[in-house]
Length: 496
Image (cartoon, rainbow, N blue to C red; front, side, top):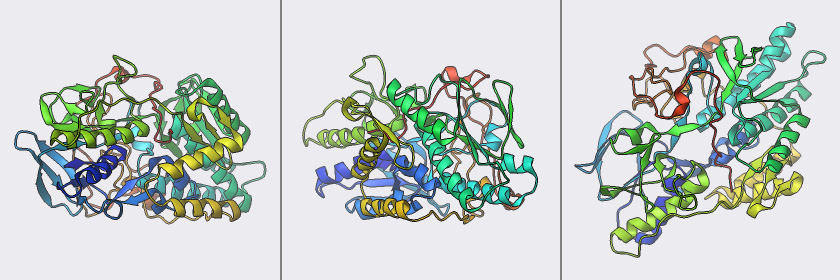
């Protein structure tokens, strides 16, 4: 029984089905019927890739795995049962002999006034689709107005967090909006303005300084306003107040400061490490040999750095899934257990166009060479859709992008403080975030109220739509203190 089909869950299911060869029933519980390749999500928001290009069918690529659509709500470890709710609101129960918890992570919140109400994250496909529509709409409205102040505020886009996700969103976003205004010019002398904020001293602080400088140079040359040592102090309906005292008028606040483990792990009542379920090097929960965990939901000892845990990255989740599957097979007497051990092979950061920063096997690259390595890595890493992705890249290189807003995802459908960023809220459907969703300060989680970054029709949820989840417990750790945002982003799923 595998809970979650992210990088770790998908890899576990894929490897285990090959190891079992029909000798075991493998059940995969997931809210959606696809695996999402997160590293290419910024390209969806920028109009390069169509949404289904970054989704891989679970039933189509895992033919020997039973897919159950639903979201785990409660796990009874003693009875070995997982209670879940399906997409139509019906409850179900699944029993297991071995349980693999790979629930992943959700947006990380900090106790900054107004952020939960006025910001949107970037963890799921609905959020990427919303951002794509929203940015397109703001440029179109800015081009139509005669008010220079309103035009400037609509065409100012603030991204908080200069890790992988935030850097790629800002890089692609600037190219996307520049292409739009080339066809639909703004007022004389005005152009879209993207601001990238982070309390860290440099862009991509997790990387080698040379790669960080490469990314910083590309962003600044492209026109992105990069501000290090600065973050958001307060978000309002009209803009954001920065920690340096400046108020920036904007209709767009993209929150990329990091993630926290899915609250499901904490609900088990087992030993935790900063919200992650503690496991041994074999990815088993101490005292519960039938329970395995890996990916963002698990605190896996880093054998390369004794005393620490592996970071929440896709490269670790993907490789942990493979080890987890083989250790499950070993628990039934098929093979021997292995401890998880891995060394980084390098990182890639897609900066849009032909620009990228990469250090495969420790070799620092930039420019076209880095761009080729980055795209080659993504094609090799994707478990499906390679031809379709390559075709979209080719079309984007020779044809103009289609800058249209479909209006399929509303602002209220993708609140920042949701426990399920992969599922957009829909009127009349079951709650997608009934599980606890702790905020950093321990206050009751707040769902996004009608935000200022959408039209009134978009902002107002249909009558009867529940928007307030239950109170919950704070996430442990030093980031709960009020004040300027700490640099909390992690290497995103775009690493090699």
